[in-house]
Length: 221
Ligand code: DX5
Ligand code: ZN
Image (cartoon, rainbow, N blue to C red; front, side, top):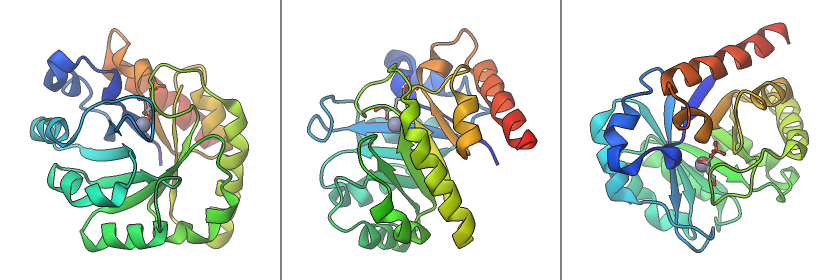
């Protein structure tokens, strides 16, 4: 499967509802939550998430770039989150956290910063619907894609295949027409794109172009 996830971090906040409605063909909407502590930037919180959820039936992926993510699970689920993706670096007990999310009725994901090795977490992947590999330092949109994280993606792909797991590999940061093919080739199935979608003249068309490139790579693999 291919999932294209526009990040509303790159949308026009004064016209957020209208921007979300520009991507009805997106597989999910990526909501970047930043607290000014885990990352050196602030974005928005549960009220904006709730407002987005009101204008769309699309699946909301909540990327929690915040400290003590566990404290906020109920809040973001109540705001409309369908999958909560917390940072592995910020979680005290990531397996417990995943179980809690499942008990609360939503999917669980973890995100991992470019400099954090994946090996210590491979055996815990079975508890997660998604693992999101950061291909920029989290905190800001519009940064340059870091191709060196693709070795982490390959490690994940091989492990997931060998173990027969259904965990989806996502990637976040610097994804656009110039970079999506190499990520798809390495094994990514879920692609977050902020500036490449909302910075485009026609965001829905941008989603389709990204999907076509990724699908072509997947089909020839
Ligand atoms: C960065 C965020 C990303 C960001 C991606 O910390 O997690 O989701 O919106 O933006 P682009 O696609 O512009 O790199
Ligand atoms: Zn994100």
